Amino acid sequence: MIIFKKVNDIASFLNQQKQKNNTIGFVPTMGALHEGHLSLIKKSKQNKHLTVCSIFVNPTQFNDATDFEKYPSKHEEDILLLSRVDCDVLFLPVAAEIYPSGTTLEISYPLGEMENLLEGKFRPGHFQGVCQVVDRLLSIVTPHTLYMGQKDFQQCMVVEKLLQYKYNHVELAVCPTERTTSKLAMSSRNIRLSSKGMVTATAIIQGMEHAKQTLLTLPLRTIEAELTASLLASGFSKVDYVSIADANTLLPLEKWENDSKGVVLVAAFLEGVRLIDNLLL
Image (cartoon, rainbow, N blue to C red):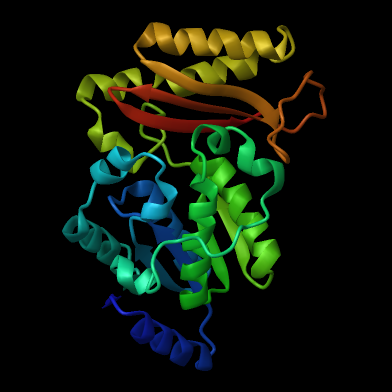
């Protein structure tokens, strides 16, 4: 694996690879890698791409400074993990390489109503920051395929809008959420949970699976309310949202029909850690 820290260096290398008819698969991350990230690397490798992973904790997508400061950094472990799955290139830049002119957002990305729903509502400015860093990374790596995990369901939809807006030649491959044996969605934030918290956190997937089983027997708002109550009862300190939504728009579904394409999405706090998850219905 080759490690690059400078924009000009990685851009020059990737241009040479493209001249050799190599296609580029790209997995952007914020580090503290786990099997979910590695599954994206493996998928890109399976598709015969020269595979690039980036590790950059982007300050502009954190609306909570404390969350940014506490985000785990494990570069040595990350490099070892990437080597084990034969990642070809690691891009490990400092902020000045990504934002040479500073982090001020120079354009407003046209995200429509998506920007004000769910994560957008509870984390103002978050998705503009996501688009800002993904835009910059795409301009550097210029991949053929971008790989992301379904756990960040709304973020995937936002990035799809960015691609339609500016990078319609880049394919977005959304891969299934990787889970532990207890079905907890793998997340870099999980390492901030205690062993007890890791067990409690499984209440999210258990609640979503129960919600799926009751779609035809209970009103959707009742299901949401019951799932919220069950999370609080199990030990979560706060629930930002539980939403049964249209999988194409993320607007709340009013009624479940047999041909509905839905998703249940959850964001909740446990031991001071904000966890998100979703389940396609």
